[in-house]
Image 1 (cartoon, rainbow, N blue to C red):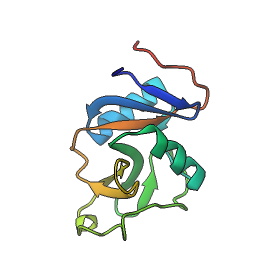
Image 2: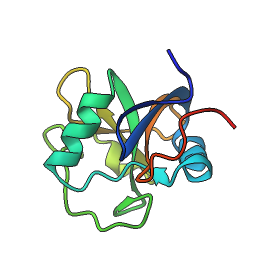
Image 3: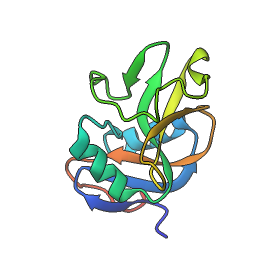
Image 4: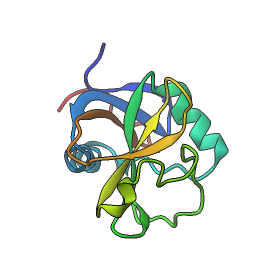
Length: 129
């Protein structure tokens, strides 16, 4: 498995190296554009088709919902409700997409180490520095 990323669509790259949410965000910003912002069902399907298990996306809460790139939060794909596990009572929770099962999003502790999905509209980087 390539640790630097797998490309399915020119828009999204999954990076298989496990990092916490803020390290994943930093990696995406340094090597691509940012963590993935999922704005609609079509983009959710692209991410779902790309990621085999669970991965960070660019959504976080502090205390409101925000996308890492500053985009408006208008589309969601939460597992039941975003507060399913009561985790939203804790500040700065980060969102992961559980793509091997439901494809739904859940909030996890930001220090959890997971693969992650970056946004890459120019398809300009798929190998290590």
